[in-house]
Image (cartoon, rainbow, N blue to C red; front, side, top):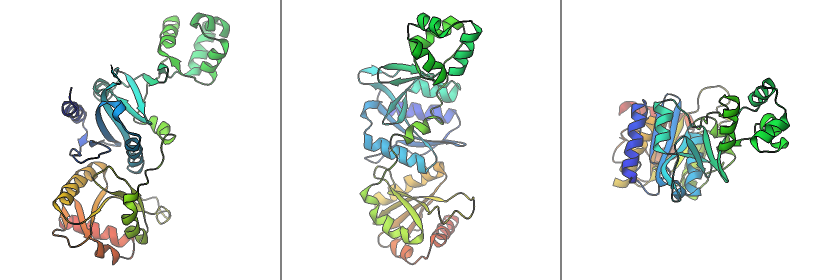
Length: 325
């Protein structure tokens, strides 16, 4: 299956599940192919025939963008090395969960989350250690007897029960046959795996954002530069400035370049992504603008930004331009 067919299948499954889908990211390099939202679930999805093709830099940017856009990065692929990805299994590449199209369908269309994750050494399952202990005691089995039955050490059984140590698929299957009870815990990679991703990569600092940072820092904005997206940075009011209340901090997808046909194309794509991400979208133009907006992306000349005093001036400018548009 080629990538185009796979992306179309991903879009079809998500649309049938009720997701709002952004336009395709058709720039290179690109850290994600589509953005998708269903209520509070926001996904940045990259589609790859072979998930081993995901580069560390791309994974870093996906995780970083997901952090600042309150979303989850996800890779959908067909194979790893020369082996097809197995259904109901979550794989990880640089901390990004990766699944095949069948697992995507099961999760969103059938409400059947995967049970298995791949890690060095094989396939593993998470279990509830306290449940195992209760089942063992109710069956009047000692730790030693269960260890002998499973072909593992007493220490290993203790780790299963006390530390919730994950099991190989074979051990779980044996355990479930022994007690006639399900022990495997579902992998909610949309929520739980955010914790795992934080341990992998926490920054996406890049040089190209230096210009935007210098332009916006004086207005009290934090600027998070990116290098593989249609926009150049994610900008938002400095958290210290916003600490007086609990209002959500407006987030702005921000681009910067001279006015050109390529800029207009990026601005249009930024508008589609921001609609799905529920953010604002702004392109800072180095020189004169030929229009005020491209769809919902506001175009603002660099000298207009330099004449503003603070974040309130900027966000008011954006609101006025969008309403006028």
